[in-house]
Length: 598
Image (tube, rainbow, N blue to C red; front, side):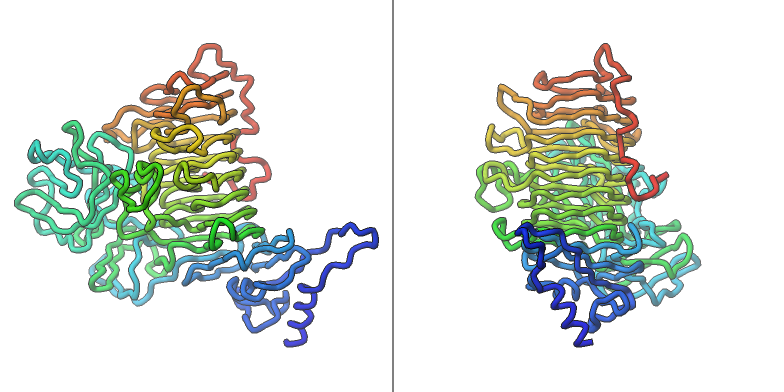
């Protein structure tokens, strides 16, 4: 074994000897191997592979690199009990790349952020229970997300409705954000809500954001529930109540595929759809983390190809952003952006990148996440996500968080292409998007399908208060997109949405949108907000050129905008010429490596 290691070390550290002309010829990548039945004390060869990515990473760290390196993961399951972390010390060196790939084809090597739950005992005729040693906030059976037991029961597995609606108990309590009131008789006084949460489209008639908030205590005689944290908006707005449901009580567990968790006792209750032996509980919120120590010391020149990442966790409570400007408690040029950016506790994805550059995420299959699938936080550029299937995602598919405006343009020049993203926002339907770009520019989003979203397909946002030069969401290109089944449970939105991008006249055209097909945008009948749109250019949604856009049925206008954008050949205007639509190029390409989901 020691001889093999010496040989591999020599291969990795020896400089490449090229032809005498002085120009370095291409060299063959150095390859290593990992297998589920491997051993980390082995040489990492095909015959004697390593067992873990962590060991391969540590072995490569600090080595001199004169060729690309490929780490081959053989088909099988790799359980992730702790986030696999990469820092700048793990970067490819001397212009070469280190790629971790599924050796037997896309999706064959699976990184699982969950373990089976065992020790089940019958609680009653249908429900099982077991003791657990950790808390988690979503659950899966046989590759499908379980529903947290709720009241009222959801209509089907891929919708969020029906809901209850909060009421206004007294006129002076219209603005409350921590008290939820019901109609008399709507709640059952016998319910045990010790571990329960409320999931609320806060804002009354607005349907923009959802909050998931633990219940502090009910006051049954007052028809009042006090929440442990404030919601984003008030429970009542313009005399209209907020839609909500209650979840995570054993009293709500009344049908297959539902679970409840008694956190104090460490007990999980579940009514299986099939076999109780196929229940998986998350172990991590993030499976892969790529994080440089600063914007000047980035992790870079890495690739992850063909890997499947399945299962990750959510959080015990969620609210999108801070409630008021300055609530972050940090000095910023635009404290209003506190309301636009995720709070630190919610800045994560199944793959999280911070301070990174030149990273390729190709031919991935990411599924059953607790929150966002791919999350780019602050300083990230030249990141490529391509040929990937993202499905059954807790929040956004891909999110770029570009940092506070007016404090330096550190994120951009990313490419997101040939991706199929479907069933997003399963746990956070409010504000969810297939691709969400926040204060970031010079990105490309192309050849992408987004399907089944409560709110957006694609969004690009900054803030209306941001002055010219301080916002960085310019130079973006959106092309060959298909957005289907968006706006399923929200209003005052568009399948393609922008906000606060260019806020001052004149509005130079800096972002371009072309060859986009948007299907019907029809919300649930319970949705109380204003209508749905194909394209919604909200306040500051200016400086865009639209070319060859087709929108299906909507409940409001197909296109809503201030007079600050250029439109050529769109079907909401007279003279639309469908022959100019390149339908055969819209959506994923023929090179997409996975079967198209039904």
